[in-house]
Image (cartoon, rainbow, N blue to C red; front, side, top):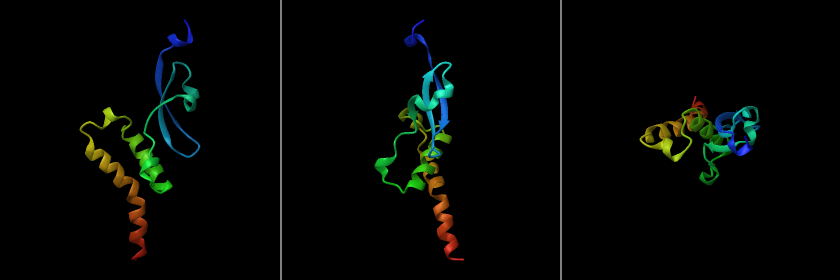
Length: 99
């Protein structure tokens, strides 16, 4: 069996920035998930969000399994809920300013 014959399996890991990722790795190499082929969530940098919000949104998308275009089908409300969750802490912070 050559390396190309080893099936790829899904693995998850948290990177040094605290972001959770789903990747594909050769079976038996799950401990090296950080070197895997990314599945998702997608790169959010083009949204130009504040770093803290981008990280929360990334992890919400991960948690909800919204990783690929296929995952989004019929789940628009979950995308909206992920956005709401990413901004929730900011809303709480603003609200406390009025107390």
